[in-house]
Length: 97
Image 1 (cartoon, rainbow, N blue to C red):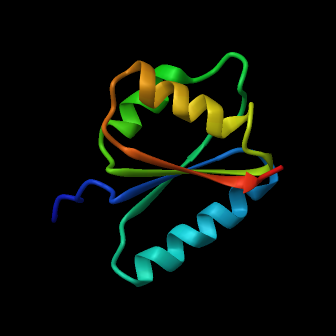
Image 2 (tube, rainbow, N blue to C red):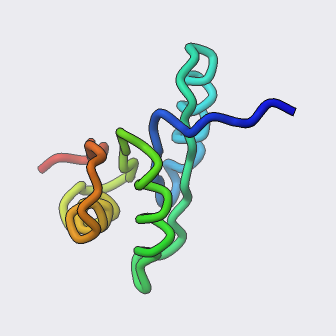
């Protein structure tokens, strides 16, 4: 058995756009990019420890949400990155107002 390499990117999704995040991971895999998809079921209580454990392993994280990037999942991920001193880059994908 060949050990699986660490992912290149994490797609952190919540709600109805989770299916699109999974489809994006498949498209990235076809191009040789190892993406992992994390589904956040609730923002309260926030899964901060689980997110921090995942984000320590990736250089890039995309938060994917169907609504405003402010105050939602992207903000939660930004807080986890900042508060845990993680070195990954964050791109928040969602509605910009």
